Image (cartoon, rainbow over all chains, first blue to last red; front, side):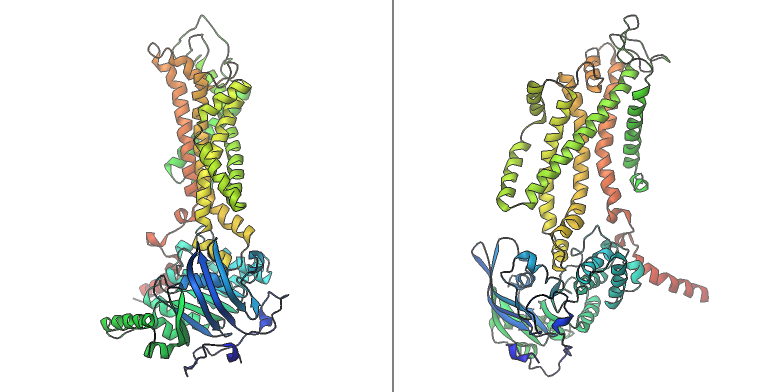
Length: 295
Length: 299
């Protein structure tokens, strides 16, 4: 239903996303000119810091409920893309171009207005679950905070909703687990808490910046399962092509802040056109050979 | 909170010494063994006795009574300087962290200049203007440490504001006030506590030092510093007398310095709750223990 605005039309037959399309009416930030879920459209996104160009004319689109991978080597601009999508680029960064969230232009909005979309329109999961949680607050309170903000719940209702949410991201025994501090949880549990925090505002889109990189292989597999179960449209940043192949149908390849190639994941992996993509694929193949083809 | 505070020996020491100081200050309002200011030329340099616990000084004053009366000054200086340092520190930190960029940067430069301005010089300037009094000591120490706190806190606030968890909170939709009061302030508080306790310790020390130099409390205010100054003159002849105010100052300064550390440790969940690193994963323990018990019973 939304392929018309999708320049990265998935050609991969195995539609892993099982696109459960969301309508804009499920989003609590009403009052703007959002009429239909038309996707997350990024056009000509450029970020400059002190005249240095970090992102240069980045264009891609995420149809509602679809997962698009963003890959590239270190320093290629993956993380800046994530932050710019959230409007959380460092102070002093100059952002131009266009980010449309189901039709609403986000670039150029004053931060106060932009903040209304964070968590509800578009949310983010970070790479390092160890540092993405406030060390001094119980994890339950950290999940309850966006719940109270976006769903207008009082303290008691937010607590109940937090337990429910914690259960839905696969945390055992939420009752007592939510009373823990972040340092008392394992890396996988922390990342589940972060995912619960991100999903608290029932966002239509989720930016995941290398969310499994800091986790061990078994935990990574479980967290990926969790991501696969989410219905939000997703920008999934990764440097790991095995993860990419599992999670996304289409992908964008970044190199030195530019989109050098995009298309279906199967095609990118089988027949990389740009040297940057080829280098990533070669590196992944070399790793796979060393580990006996496990990857 | 108190229970966690006294979980460590340093916390016990700080709480006991400072608790005793406050109790003695209150007691001294109503009762001292002798009149702390009454001179008695017939009982100079008496050794400790039931009548004069710590002996008497060159003019026959009862050292114990004078020390007891001096606790009020010490408490007043510590609390007064602490309060001024807190207010100055918080206001300057807020201006230096939350305002427009040019104000923030201007404040940073101003703080760097003010930090280089010695407490003693401030006290001497204020004394020249207002005359020597306890108020001058309290204000000058409070101002100096307020500036120091603001300078240190500014860096801490910047570090926290750039941290992942603040970015993550903002990404989940938390606004400016939520970030400020639920993340920035609580995470900067430990550093603030430690700095404040150091400020109070230094205030006690500075009062003693300034009184010693004659810039502090007047002769009608009992002060440990001025007593030390008086007794120190005769230290070659009556070495024990000067020990009393010296030891009192040292104890209180040490207790105040340690109090900040103890409070910081007592309020940090990473130090007060079971840690995975210590081998206890609460969630895992809960899941594993029943199974283990069952296996044990059937086997």
